[in-house]
Image 1 (cartoon, helix red, strand yellow):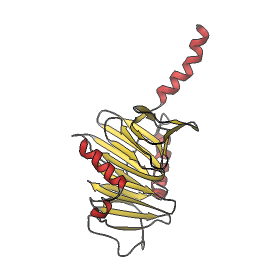
Image 2: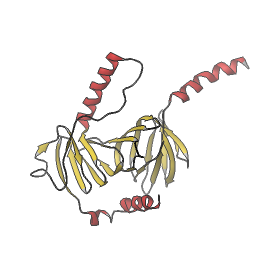
Image 3: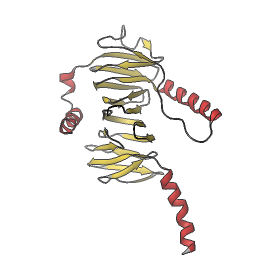
Image 4: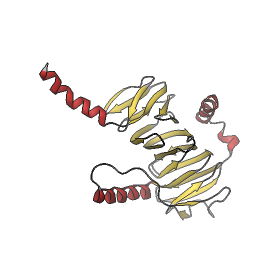
Length: 249
């Protein structure tokens, strides 16, 4: 009995150290979850934690209900790594890395609540405080579309450097844990404003996109921002699926 107790202690400590990101509420088709390089089939209501990777195969989709409310839905042929989760009664921060494919984020903040959800792609990062958007990842170019509210966007490179500086500064003040996720200064750009021509300007700081706007960011940092065609976009099967689910909530 004494030996069993000693063997169980490391396992209990390891599980308690994980931060809950949410749970898988709707796995459709072939959806898998990875923990420590081991893949397993996703199950309905399966809890997911920071450090998990979720991937979908062709004709497969997945919905994650975030801890404390909100949805992140993953399209087919996609891979999403759950990086950080900091959940408190009135402050909820989530950070994930979209390695490839599509994600849909739908998360409105309750009255007085601060809800930050950041999705990073190979070339861009999109962060919200309670709204709705879609991000598409590509090695050479990524895009973000805003369906409701506003979304803060920056280069992935700038975001990574910003977080490194915050981690460095936090470590000098307090080595007791990781820094909380916060955004840098934001320059708001309202629709229908756009850059003078496609990919002529390099995105150097955070900008805010309003509803109906799309931004494409290349690996060199150059970007193109414009109003997307809502009618044409609504014909996309992934968009239709998400709109139907959001309407039912």
